[in-house]
Amino acid sequence: MASNDPGYLTMPVAEDAKEVDSKGENGLGENRAAAPDQFDPAYETSRWEIYAYYAYYIGNNGLTLFNFAPTAFQNLLSQAAGESEILFFAGRNRKINSIVLLSNGISFAIQVVLFLIIGSYADRHEILTQSKVIAYQTTLTFWTAAFPGLARNTAQLRTKAEEYNEGMISRDQYDTADMLARSRIANVAFYVQSCGEIVILAIIVGILHGIHVEASEANNNWGLSVLIAFATGVWLLLSIPWFVLEKRRPGQPIPPNMNIVAVGIWQLYRAISKIWQLKQSLLYLIGYFLLGDSLNTTVTVIATLQNTIVDYDTLTLTYLLLVGIAAQAMGIFSFWWIQRRFGLDAKTMFNAVMIAILLL
Image 1 (tube, one colour):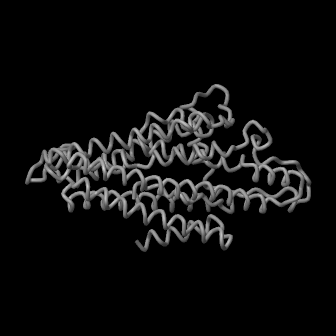
Image 2 (cartoon, helix red, strand yellow):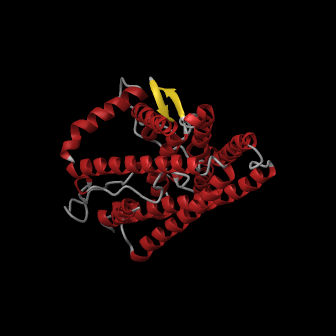
Image 3 (tube, rainbow, N blue to C red):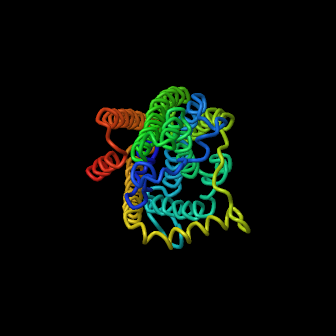
């Protein structure tokens, strides 16, 4: 698959983190807004803003930094090592596959540090503007952080928020509507991205035939560079509408005497000090981390072995991606159809996907 992001999943709300419904349960009749920006018409999500959001994800499909750039890296290492398949890396001689896996681990360690420092941008500043100069995984993470704001500002959910404030519906009813709105945007975005990626890969196949990548090793190397450049150009082109049409919705204010870096560290400290009071949330985060790490490692190992088996044949790798993305699109559509058809919540779908991943 082109991306290791489970795009059709939305985070379920832990039971210990749910708020008590002030109208339906305790009868106090408090006027509580679900989110302040839901009642400002200037922040209402437009159809074109959602289309731009989908278009960005079609461009940010992972073909460059997640798929073919690592393949090009492994390919060059293999050519440098020759028949020995051994190079000096990180203080000792290592196999090519070991170097690739270690590099992947180092990159994720760097991402952890980056997210701890700049993660607070997702709460306090424009979501993607500051992250566009950072690698694919970081841009994908900040892109994902944008969709809850898009969902809660749709016309349908803004109406639900007003009904909740007026006591016409309960908190559970509002949360259900919010969950379905998030799931719809996440699932449609991932499905549209998969379909768009199939088109991009089909064009890439034509490009690779045009430059005769199977004629020689040099042509194959050039083919990898060309398709990375092409996919990057598509990404840049499709990202422009999002940066133009995204509405800069207000985030949390930075506390006094703090900057954007300090507040990230402060948030981490608060999370650590409070997490023991939210035991289900803690278990969820531990499970999500283990599952995510396992998935990332599995995808990396499969890609590394696949590159070796096909001898870095760019055309064959593209065909394999086409098959994988087509299957991905069918899977996303099936899960979304099942969720809508039977009215299943995000937690149920999350559990189903986890089981599917473990079985695979």
